[in-house]
Length: 216
Image (tube, rainbow, N blue to C red):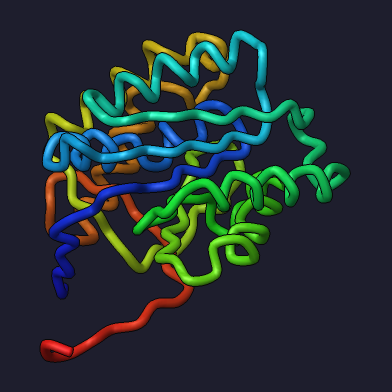
């Protein structure tokens, strides 16, 4: 297992199809990033949920996951489950979002996600963020679409537990789902931790990157 260290990150972009996708996919990483990089700028984009209870949940959850960060959130009003029918407004909004930011890392859904909304967003991301490091996160849910990740971000047990606590606290609208519980979230992060010899981890799909050897 080779460690690659990102020693200084000034800004990250978080992209989600629905309110709670970002928290489920990258919540532990956000808790870690904002602890070690207290001046981090976090710019988030969510396709659906504006002016709803879901947006309120999202704002509270991201604030808890990014304590002290310079956080801005954009939420659209695309109907849940119907994103493919709104390709043009989503692409236009994502391009506008991308023009106003300069992230070193972009966190987004991964292309193999079985949910059509997640998958559409994942396919649009590289058309807007063409020269960025894009890490595709996994979203725990009923569909058997768990990816084979290529990048792991280790988490301490404390961070994994805090992520689960925040997600469960701030998204009460999702508690009816039989997979939405602490055991499920900690089970997945423990599995990813086993795969990188750590207590817990969040895992990502990396489609393309460059590597440099030496000083130049």
